[in-house]
Length: 204
Image (cartoon, rainbow, N blue to C red):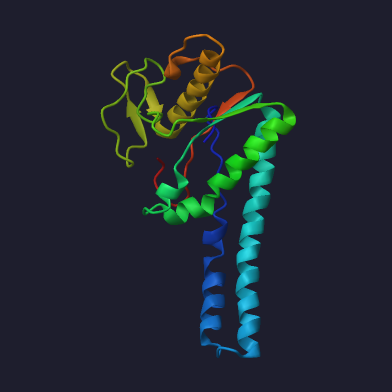
């Protein structure tokens, strides 16, 4: 999810290839250990996984290049991927390739002279009202939109992405000697914030 409301869908490469991978794995399990056919089956499974990895990497390259070229600054949520990988979100985390994607954003930002930064994972991006700065007491993953007491109506993901952008800008300005409330820094043209939306699972 981008701060301008654009939803960037994840192609779910692993999920789409799941049936082929299962067939290849079953075929491998039926082959006798040490046989030539088992060796061929091992290669087939490896190639299937490699195709998924290649497709995911190609998608990440194209998307990261577009975001960096189109924006002067990009801020992302500093997700604890290893922590999420131990939860029910594990498959979605792996299929999203978030660590690989953000690493690409970082080195491409340096290459093109852009600003790239990660916003603290504990920043309440989803619960913070981007209009007035009030933080909601609780917000289960099932809540996809909410209304603040100030009257502002928020899409959970769009609001989070805007707040991440504002927090990134605030950190940048504070580092230069200014003082800005993280959730209320206005966005400038050519800057983007992102909020991760893991495929096949509720967004954080």
